Amino acid sequence: MNIIFNKDRQRVPIKSWCANPEPGALDQAINVSNHPKIFDHVALMPDLHPGYGMPIGGVSALKDAVSPNMVGVDIACGVMANKFDFKAESLSREDKIEIMREIRSLIPMGMRHQRDHSVFKNEAKDLLEKHKQSLRGLGKGNGLVTFDAVAEQLGTLGGGNHFIEMQVDEEGFMWFMLHSGSRNIGKCVCDRFNRIAKELNAKQGISLPAPDLAFLPVDSNEGQEYLTLLDFCIDFSFMNRDCMLKKITESMKRVIGNVPVRLEKINIHHNYAALEEHSGEKVWVHRKGATFASLGNTGIIPGSMGTASYVVKGRGNEESFQSCSHGAGRVMGRHAATKTFSMEKFRESMEGIVFHCSEKHLDESPMAYKDINTVMDEQKDLVEIVHKLRPLAVEKG
Image 1 (tube, helix red, strand yellow):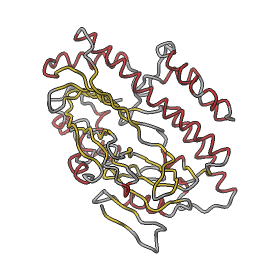
Image 2: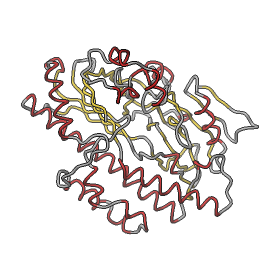
Image 3: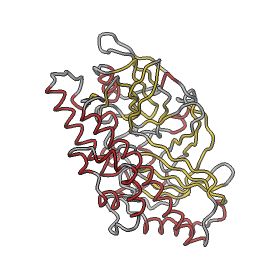
Image 4: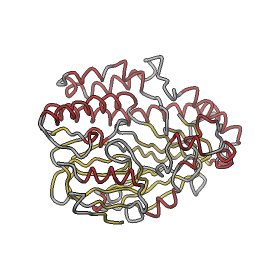
């Protein structure tokens, strides 16, 4: 861990687990260190790369305030991993291809939604019922959360870096891992309240180090509305991944004739803010592209789709606000990756893994991501490795 502090440029230090932060991400971190509500220090995870406002892989704590862009547009995006009592060696390559084909047929991907809102109608009703009292008190924000909006997006993967992977651990057991979040609901919440925060800060004459770091006081009506919808998006995100797991097990049953016993399930999220106690004070910790890594807490750190992923236990390191990376992190932007890498190299990087390499996925090729082994080495004091998972088949949104 390196400490970066220039008294002429920063209000608080930056503690970085990223050995070589790229200049754009570091500039964003310096902006965060000058936030009027910043607390103690800023922490940078080893998967650091530029985002909007706060860099992805950034962790910061605000006193009595929340910042929508320091959470991110895909609120509570996260990863689920499920271990099955089934040896992966029992599957032929054709079996893997067929299972992934079934998954594609049952789980809407990219911009697709559930055309039939009855597919997860019970889950949608349960989710809305759970949040009925808190949502009732909202103003215009309540229009973002309707039965149709929830029912059409539950059980959908999304695009970009969202994925479903079939994996195998050291003992040969099969796992499924998936990465998705709160879909369009989360984006709409972030976009709306970021605009509100900018207007509110401007009206109050508050000077910000960057426009995308606008914030809401948590004791304001606007702040309370955002936190209410943040809680809803977190629950939606968890349920969304659960719904997709149901379709994954259904796909397995169609191909192998039964659903193996689930031995272990992990469901975690990044891109959120939570009220926590650090250094004796209650503060709002913002984890953008970072996950909670308290002592003994189970986490997941995916690599790129052609490399290993890791199940980990947190070490509870207070220097990182008890956080760790949420993945390998990009080393190159999407446009640059598409222009830089060849399809031949892409196919070579995915050798032995069931995946249809095409130009539309070139920006997600393993070469566009950091070396996961380096990332894990840089955060040895944040997490300990429990399982190393190797990809067998991949589906990208």
